[in-house]
Every structure is written in C-alpha cells, then in structure tokens.
Figure 1 (cartoon, rainbow, N blue to C red):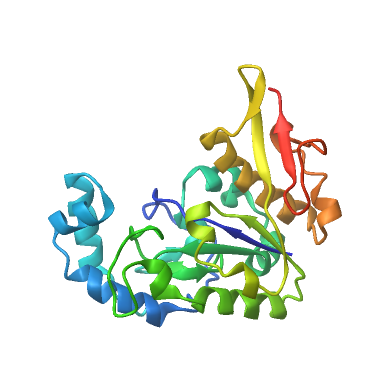
Figure 2 (figure 1 turned 180 degrees about the vertical axis):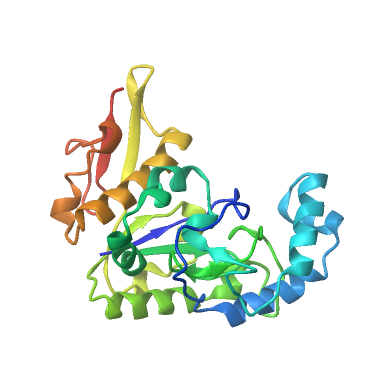
Length: 256
C-alpha cells in the first residue's frame, strides 16, 4: 500500500530534525525549472499570484532568492519534519520510532506544487507554491499542465518498487488532481472522515485534515498492507461506517 497526502503551507525550519538520514527529491530538476520562474517574481507579483498578504509576499520572495541546489542538511530539512499543518499534526512524525522510519519512507508520498512528489525523508527548502496556482510556464497556464504525467509516472515507479497494489488517497482534491487516475497502476481508495455536528455527520475541514494524518499514522503503526485491515482504523474515536461507505470510498465517522 502506498499513501499520498498533501503538503502544508506551515513549515518548521527552526527546530532540528531528529534524524540525519535523508534522501533527495526525485524530480528536483523540474523544481529548478519552476524556481527559475519564481525567482523573477517581485513580492507584489507573488501576492497577486497566490492571493497572499504583503508580509507573506515578502517572506516568499526572500525564500525564493536563497533557494538553491544541491540540498544538504545545512540548507534543507526532511519533508516529513518540515511540514507542520493539520495533516502532520495527525501524523505526528516526531514520535515515530527509528524502526518505523524505513516503513514510512517506503509507504508515504507527499504531493507538492514545487517538488511534484516527495518521500518523507527527501530534503526540501522553504517555499510556497500550491498545486492549484495558475503559474504560466512553457508547458501551459498552470501547475497541472506543468507536471503533466510526470508525478503519475514517478508514483507508478514507486508502486512497482514497493510491490504495492493499493493507492490510499489521503490528499486534498487540489493535490490529487495532479495525478491521472486512469494511468495509476493500483486500486485507488479514497476515504472520507465525518464528524457528528448539529444532528448529522458532516465533513469539518480541520478534523478531516487531521484524520488524514491519523490514518497515515495508523497504516505506519500497524504496517497495514490491505484494504480490509484499513477498515480497523480507530484513532481518536473514528470508526468505519459501512452504511455511508461506497466501493473504494470508505467513510469513517465519530460522534465525539
């Protein structure tokens, strides 16, 4: 089983990584192409491009100017420890045992607007470039056209290397759209996470994002390799809800 998740806009490059072991992004040459374009954009153009504040425009202008390869542990950090959003709160990578790191590296993939696809221990430098950004390149008017089938092809390589027959899609729609499902060489499972609110089960964004991280951690903790075993997911009160589920789209609910 291979998992795909989204990255996060919030980053931590201040604290030290707990592990020295690291890897390099597989599509870094494509990232360099994108960054050449991003380096030319002023803070104001970054504000307009990504609908961000003046302070974030300035911050990301400064990030872009110092972004450079090669990545080392002195100028970069492993992706799974750098991202700190809701998904990563659920994943809680800092509490992974050393014995779990290899399994995590082989099981989890992070989709990214700048890096395409990342393994957990791939080094990254600070950036902001969401997959849905309408960035013009020689390949088209947005990042979906820029990446084309490149991310899907790399994912298929990883599926083959890890002998995975199932792709567990825990990414947001914005990031999942970079994949071509018809070309993915695996059965794709897309769970939903609903919380009981005002008399009904509803998708609440914050909880759903964290639940994606929780399910990723469940797969890692239990070394899940089948869809059947995935239905046992029960972290933080979630349970499989057969009545609301459909084929390839299991639903997990909680009432607390």
